[in-house]
Length: 513
Ligand code: FAD
Ligand code: DLZ
Ligand code: SF4
View 1 (cartoon, rainbow, N blue to C red):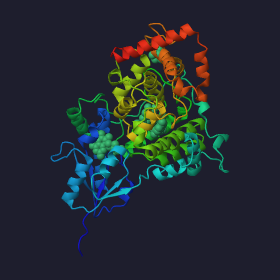
View 2 (cartoon, protein in one colour; view 1 turned 180 degrees about the vertical axis):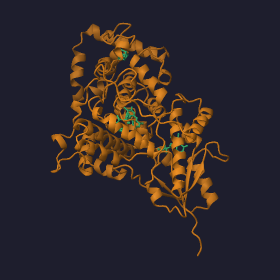
View 3 (cartoon, helix red, strand yellow; view 1 turned 90 degrees about the horizontal axis):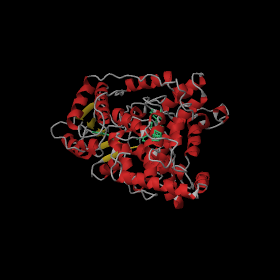
View 4 (cartoon, protein in one colour; view 1 turned 120 degrees about the vertical axis):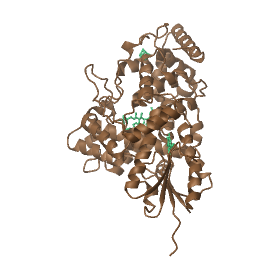
């Protein structure tokens, strides 16, 4: 019998799942797997060094685990001789070396890479990414014919389809689909988040830290202090830690921020989940069970499940429905460059300095920090969407284009004209004051608007509304805000505008704000 030439399977750095569809299509006794650390993927945006450490270390651990399961894995380290520097280059090199007839791979998480591979004239056999509960095709079917895509409608469908938090008759547990109204409590003064789970770097991670220190010292962000799970087992420890110590209070304090508290009651699982170390369906089942057993309240369980089968699946669907034109949208016509302090944290605004500082230190900020602090400021200041999207993609451990882009371009910057969210999440300093203790420690005064020491968010908020009146004032959800603006005494309104102008001029001049 003539031996069949081997087939090659590609596993990317965010596809570290044993049940990946392309792996399931191959035969460990005859086929080979390729995994490659490449300069191109590590540098197309200046990824945070901790993020590169995470991806490379988790890839190396996964390759080891695949070998232990009997797979033949060709693993190309970054410094390996002959490394071509790109995924397409490595596929071509190894396909020729092995004489492989077909290359099996799973849909990429980024349009950029998927397109590059499709253009590469290789014998590719594509597989659906079944790690998402709603496929690209199923989302397109749901979206078809709808005038407006609303997350809440999508989410209800997903709850029913997945059978999560439902009563026996199929109605939503507790009589409502959404308990968000209960989930906006500021943190009580004495309360602190649970201790963070610790993951000691092993020999593999230590070697990767040295490599990243040597090769990526030009990227912003810390190299030291890596504390992330890099194996499936560790990711489950992190998840169990959250179930034991975080979930019960997740709902109540989901929107809270506090000095020196980077995580509060957030799960910190996004990076592990997005690279394939956790499975979304298992997470949701665990949360449903915790609620049924009375271990966590319904507002926590519902709030958490909504993030996963609602927001996460929804932004994934929107990304693949609208790419590539979605990435080029700039509905508000923003032109301002990203201020340098986003990369350094050198700003007098306490909330920004805390959020950016922990981002550079840990590669992490929770949702409200990303949305209502750094995101809100970029929206109010009119930063070019491309520049702020690049920042979010570079600095967060969990950032991949499919999830970062809709959140930043759509939810934060309103650059899609309200396709993803019905109104811009613009807010003055008062919101940050209500949800955090940052203002007490700030050199600006949150209750001042036009004075030299006034919180920059205040004048910029009104400046934003004035400058975008034509695009925003017809939005019913902003009607009240525009009524307040129009009720302002004329002289005051003008002073607010002038203060906004002067802050924007200072940003343009590269001055510290
Ligand atoms: P928790 O607060 O504990 O939430 C649990 C899980 O829900 C998260 O792990 C995540 O998987 C999911 N989730 C929550 N909110 C969202 C959301 N809006 N979109 C998608 N999934 C969500 N999340 C990423 O995973 N990668 C990104 O690149 C990313 N970029 C963002 C950019 C901006 C501007 C904003 C506003 C949000 C972004 N998010 C992103 C969503 C959210 O901020 C992170 O998922 C969350 O902070 C991760 O921390 P956690 O695991 O502790 O989350
Ligand atoms: C993010 C990343 C980095 C930094 N490096 C690699 C790499 O060297 N090899 C690899 O296969 N994947 C890497 N990744 C993840 C890819 O960029 C990711 O698969 C795409 O962004 C698609 O989501
Ligand atoms: Fe942020 Fe303004 Fe509060 Fe300072 S006063 S922490 S800038 S919201």
